[in-house]
Image (cartoon, rainbow, N blue to C red):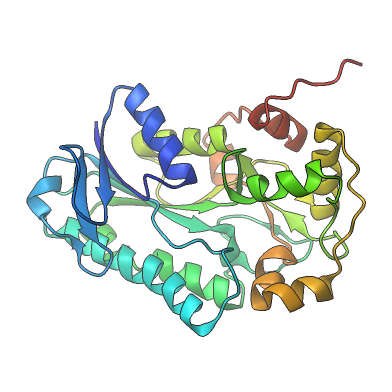
Length: 303
C-alpha cells in the first residue's frame, strides 16, 4: 500500500511510519513546510494538502497530527491551539480527500479516550456516551470533523488512544526521571482508572485497521486491563526497583496545571477495547507489568 501519515515525527507517528516501511509499504509523510524529499508532502492544517495531486495515488491516510494535550496549562490560547490543530486540521484534511479523483480506501484518525470524560469506576466501551468537559467536547468535535470523508464512502476509523507507553516519549518518558530519582507516587488519591497501551500494540492496531474492512467508526486503542493510578505508580516503581510512595496531592496538581489536572491527571477512564476484543485482536502486552518491562527492556525478576 501507499500510506500517507500526518504527525509522522510524533511518538506514535514515528513508530508507525517505521513499521509500515518495514512491512514493505510506501510511506508518505505529510509535513508542514517545504518537503525535503520525494516521500514528503506539504500540508497546511488550515487548508489541507496544498497540492492534492501529490496524494492522488495513496491507498490510506493515517492522521495523527495535533498539539500535545498535556503540554502545559489550558489557557485560552492553548485551548484554541488544541482545537484548531485537531478539529480544523482534520476537517481540512478530510475535505482534501473528498476532492480527489481517486480517494483513499481508508482514513485512520487519532482520537482519545478523553471523549468519555471522568466516569469513575464505570466500564466504558465504544458504545458509551461522551462525557463532559473541554477534552470530551474536543474529542467529539475532532471525530465529527472527518464526516465529509465518511460521506465520500471512505472507511473512517477513529482511534481512541489511551496513554501510549514508550520510553522515548509521552507520559512514561516524563515520569521516568521522577521515579528513578525515588520521588514517584500516585496522583491525588490514586483511585482514578488509567487506560493505557504499549507502543508496539498501538502500532499493531493501526496496521490491523488499515486492512480490516470490518473496522469503522470508534475503536478504543487500549490494553484490556486498565489500572488505578496507584497501581500504575507501584508497578512502575517495582519495575524500576524504586519506591513509589511520594503521593502528589490533588490541590498541588490543580495549582500547577488547572483544568488539565482535573480532566487528564485526576480523571478516571476505565476503558475496555470491546471492538478489538470482538475481532480477535491479540495484544502482545496485555498487562501493565509486561508492557513496562517490554518498553523499558527490563526482564522479569525470577521467582
